[in-house]
Image (cartoon, rainbow, N blue to C red; front, side):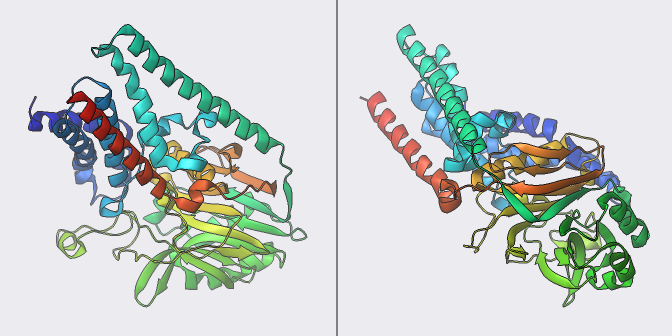
Length: 459
């Protein structure tokens, strides 16, 4: 097998992997006639591009040398996990559906995330899954049994360790909230982005779902871009709805577009019942083609625009400050910003109480997409040791504790609210202190092991 063959094998494997789990991308192109001709291209080209990272891993593994021995497992694990890391950062990054996400439903096995993070666990998991291939190598049965037993014990030990962490967490007493938090999960049609739906109608629907009680201190959380056809400065026009239905005891968090200095931002704002803006966060990580048009001058000449409403691309912000409401600190993340492991706080060194994620998942349609998106919230909660509050329109809204346990959830086909009255706090995690540096420390260990094994093989 030559270099080109090794690349093609990895590339085709990656293509098959991604086309099977990213088919939902084409659904976002069905809302605008301009984009419908691009559906076949998106279905094929995006998996082909992402598959090339696996092709690169296969090629580099071939160049270093695969010889049906244990070093081959370490070599391939190293390059495959490194390729997964690279696709999370190149061209803005798309760290979606890493191999380790297959463990999402087994919480004891992923509690180690709080120590090593997603990319390191991905490296370890790939290695352990590859070790059974040793039965095809030219080793004695004793050595094969040793490796298989060792792998089994690692899984068992990690499972027991994870269970102990969860059991110890269950002994911690919760802290009652002075203000209850209502997470609103509406089911407003995604077509509102392309139609002139009256904002008053949407607001009345949100208020009906929220069931505000003027006597109770409450923080209401509405999803991303819920008022899609108005800007933040237009909100005052609907001041009467907030005054009639909310009180001074209430704070409202919602997603809305804002317009400043000839730039449009996808924003999360905190307002009072008089629609005064108390705090504002502008999205840092934008979705290519969804929120901004790469090579905009070129594509505009061809008649294209971003998928979401309007022709002008959103602008990125480069700061992420904590949002403080009545002594509670929230780390704001809009939509797929939650998928970036080790890159949540930016320059923030202050502690906070909740990761707050608002999202619009209607672009996925009735696919596995919302569930894939939701799985990232579980990984972030364990990594950072923080409770995650997620408000999604046409998606999964939930309250997730710092061990990844889903306390309350509203599925994609339902609407309603989740009320949070207490939560548990844990100490700062090892990963939240060091981030993805840990992954590179493990890479150094793996590379050193490869060098050691190669020297032994060449003796």
